[in-house]
Image (cartoon, rainbow, N blue to C red; front, side):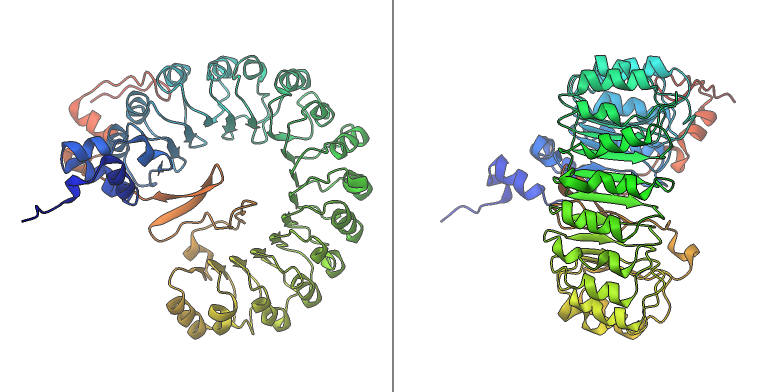
Length: 519
């Protein structure tokens, strides 16, 4: 008689594969408590490679610290909903030595001592996003410079944005640094030039202002960085205009360019950037809030940027039907954002010739009529369609399931004339389709923003879904799952209240600033 087999007879590698389909909640709250073997297997590094822990806004610090204690192989932690207290920072440093990506809330306060502990306890961090506080600027940057594996640095937060960030410690340290996002922070020209000189052979991505704190243009020295692929420029200012745009047009190697609100820039200067195949390697182009955008610039982009896959011309109010007439000549184009553009039905008709479109945003395009709405089913490859604040009368929602089979997200926030019966039927036929159809801004609880797809990956929104949230990490789609809160001690009292009850005098050594709790 054959002996019965059970899951316990499976080898560890097969069990790991099975557990890879288990949710974050079940992995830490159930699987680890089944038996000794399952607890050991649940700690396999392969199970945590793409797991992301992002605490919910209402989750207490006690819960967060408890989760961190149970996830020693966690590689990605995103604390972007609110600031946390020292007990969370202490748990992070003590129990998560394998962290690769760490993102803090923009107003989180971090001491120099905590950053030193982080360097010591989590030396493998590759991506770090931290708030930049006005105090201890140089000292903190020196500590960050000690991360030997750090590839990606984002100095988030809004505190004292006009006080220059000191980049020299990053230039002299961080031997693996490839990406720097200054989030609109100021830098001194000589300090920035020194940083580029030291990192010119490895820097791949930059997010900077047009001008420095000492009123010099930061664009010309970028020509040193031959490995630079992604560049975002904000806050255009009238500094070294000709030299700045000439240098920008000579960055032949970049594949992604964002010009954020360059309203005062002369149209001829902006057009010159794209002439003579200057940026022929571009795959992503975002021009946001440029009122002077006209047909001349559109023609130059189409003629000289043939590799474009993503074209975002958001809040370019003067963009016309003529501007989009030849977009179909961009044979690789997959993502288009024309939010707040002045196009009419003729412009939408031109867009239907772009047969590879997967992402289309026509938010706030007030001149579109019923004719445009009927054309929406012509975009047969769409994954994401956004028509927020448009007049969608005549939109054939009843045909979406058959004509738009790939649609994963459909946004019609603040729209009138919604065919509610057809929309309900669509939700029934495509239960996996994410639909946003808020009318009252207070109901949505969302800001008006456009989430961007990543070139080379099917675009999905990063807005909250029912039980999970999708986001891009290193080119892969991963799931951020809401972690169910664990019962707190002392009848779920917040940790700071618990300290008060217990009469603890707590000096947050590695946390925020020093705070003393008394009776």
